[in-house]
Length: 315
Image (cartoon, rainbow, N blue to C red; front, side, top):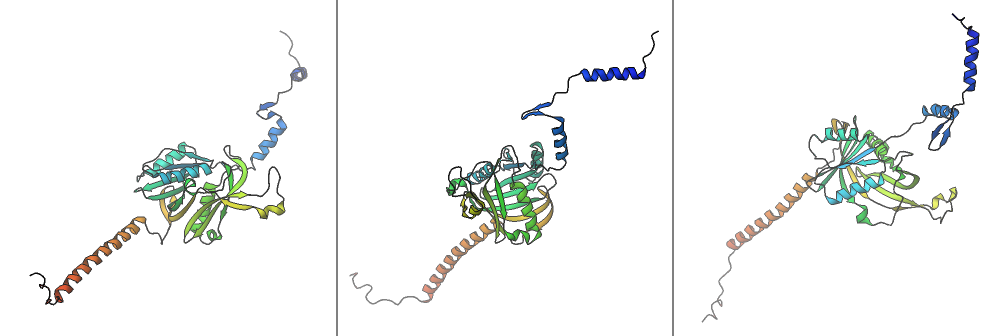
């Protein structure tokens, strides 16, 4: 048998083999080659940077009118981080179906337009699957096609969200502000968005209603000329559309249901408003009938005297 090599000899041979091999090739990416130092820097930064992965599912119920469908499509154009889906039957079990759809589409929020009787539009805003969710009645709807305003901005650009000071007065308005800012705020570096801020979403409270407006930020410069910071006051706002008003009905603790966190005491359903209008019209008809009966009774109580010359020309 041959003699065993000493340990020092085997280690020296291994070191020689390592030196003979070629250096490792850097990783190739779409932006070029990456070294190990760059990978280490990226790994260090991943623990600090927060990436917003908000995605919104936008859908509606069946038998929705064309005007409300156009409003939904206008919002889809304004939100590049949203996903559309087919219409859903508005039943009691719609919450479970919508939660499943949101999970299948890998979204975290949902905007559901529910139309009833072809007249009333309800908007559900929900964070899925744990909530909270809000139910609104949508009034004063004006789509972009109706308004034909002069404002215009890039499709897919990121908006600046502005809220009136009333949102900080009570806790339910603060909750609505946070929910709206998460759903309507477009994530930074989203693949379908553009890295520009050229329009403003305005949410203001008046008469316990949330009024929505969309304005373009226009500046007086021409061509590629840039504005100085002192000239920012010269910027003007031009309305683009759409317009709508949200009347909050209830805030739920879960997604499309759950415990009621807030209920609007001033809310009157559109069915009650229509029934009151019908009663008023029915009251008008009853007044007319009473007036006719009173006239007949008056004629019977006060008959006309017989005229002497009534039969004079009959002969």
